[in-house]
Length: 200
Image (cartoon, rainbow, N blue to C red; front, top):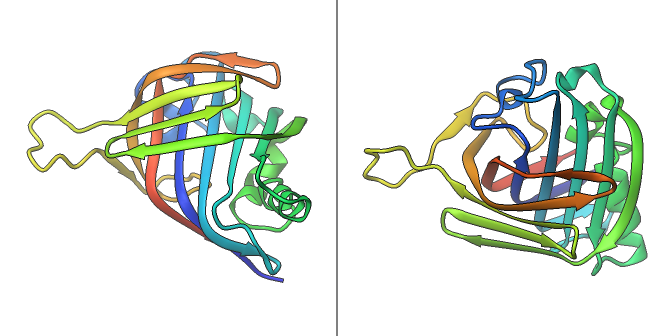
């Protein structure tokens, strides 16, 4: 049965501005690894008839310098508000079992570090986006508005290969503390989108 999700997205990673992986997954990260937190705020959607509107999901990954080499270590947080049925459906989508964008990345995952229920707080306030997941993750990014751009429109990358979409806003981390599933790092860069839409 088909599924569809819509919502907003925010991420932060360990690379310096700008993350080479955002240009292409086969470009090497700034350091000898890429550590990234991907957060999905689902405003509406259903998975095989199960309503998942208003829920949130976060994934944290530790990858080699060149992400296409695979052997990613991945952990997932699913909204504590999710029922058991919603939890299972969200895990199937974000684990890639039901197709869609995450299915394209699933072959790169070498180790699943775990799945936990957690309170996931996401706040979008103009150019600033913040995420808090219990005591494990706390970060804030700010969309980058270039010097001299009087409209206030932030920089967007177009034509990316990214699970969320091909056009995302570039951001810089303003606050960052990530320590989850044995993955610890300080986020320096980020991405955001006002809305994404998936279907399979």
